[in-house]
Length: 87
Image 1 (cartoon, rainbow, N blue to C red):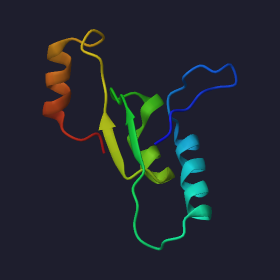
Image 2 (cartoon, rainbow, N blue to C red):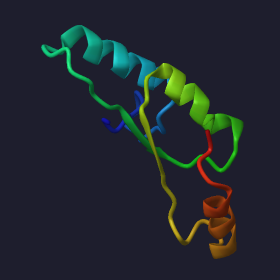
Image 3 (cartoon, rainbow, N blue to C red):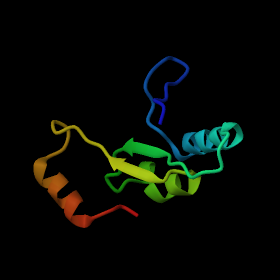
């Protein structure tokens, strides 16, 4: 999955809309009928901003939960793992 940047050249997290654009682009330009995957690496945290189901509907086939250990307490991530997949 490409890294997305805004008009100012700053990193911007993936959105379902951006993933949909990627899926449509790939669909128009691929030369094979075989299956392929679109992977999103982001943080779900159960927030509306990262509704994993919306990414799946846009064409994402894999979700890689991503975090930096300095940003999230250890117990918070243990709870996240215990809760299982977000979809």
